[in-house]
Image (tube, rainbow, N blue to C red; front, side):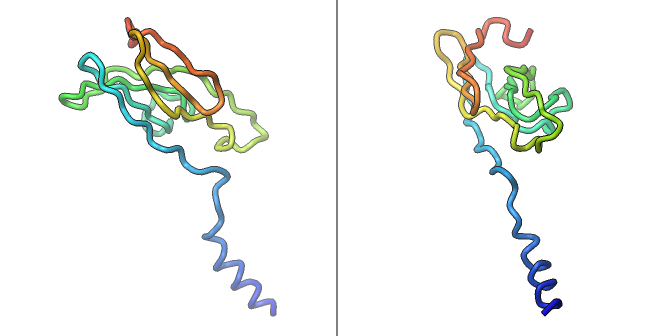
Length: 118
């Protein structure tokens, strides 16, 4: 019986689930010759301090990044798993020369496009 239980635990271990699903990709926006995209994970850019909350501007002709701007900051509590605290961007839109950034747990952020990379 003990061997059976051990085997069952060993087989079911890889089926364990993460605390949350990975975020859905956000559709990039093209505007005024630039592409605005969302890198969701800090591993995608050394300058990112946390997952979520950043918008990257890219030259669409050659894929060269122009800048990565932090839209909001996620502060992690040390006694809670960090993946459950991540706050990901869910969509981008452009309205009246401003970038509208919608995320999971904050009101929409409106950022003027003028001097976006400053």
